[in-house]
Image (cartoon, rainbow, N blue to C red; front, side, top):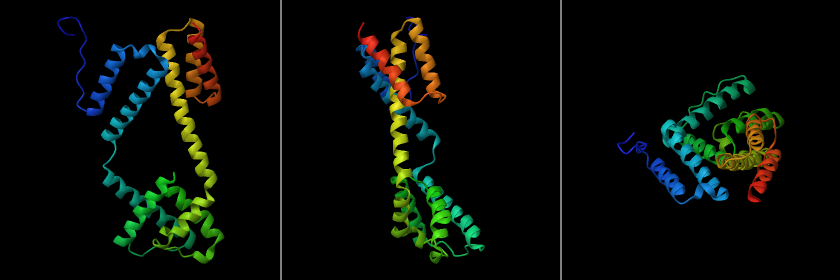
Length: 225
């Protein structure tokens, strides 16, 4: 508490947090908190900044992550190789193959998949149905033929994951809009229903369409005042 009675908050060291703090201050000074459709975007920005700061403080460096992903790819490949071939994969992983693995991991990530997805399909589906491709080598499975065959075979899974990601973003947006309404003040009955709806969605007791119906209903009711 300062001498004039105001509450002072320590200035964050992180530039992204400083930026977001200034945004919140400006939003309050300019009355943006009273404009639900605008303030919900401020809250979404705040959530993005919070995620960025958390990931920067808790995740390993990009170079270390690439190394760990490559190591995971090799470990899974060798484990599954033993299962399907009843032999250990004894070939040394060359630097050139290491680069191919990194390229493969990057390709899979860009397509919305992981090496776990790819290697599971490769050993449990593709090599079972196509035994003439055995024994697989680290170099061969990083070839475009295998990777593109995987993408084609898993198109439905890719589309489903994209849909889930869109639904996740829509859900976060609706939750933010619901919180704005709560913060603005609602009649007791509406307040209780809103809180229950947000809780039910968070605990997966209702689906996205039900959440949207409730939020949009209260927004329309609020605007008519």
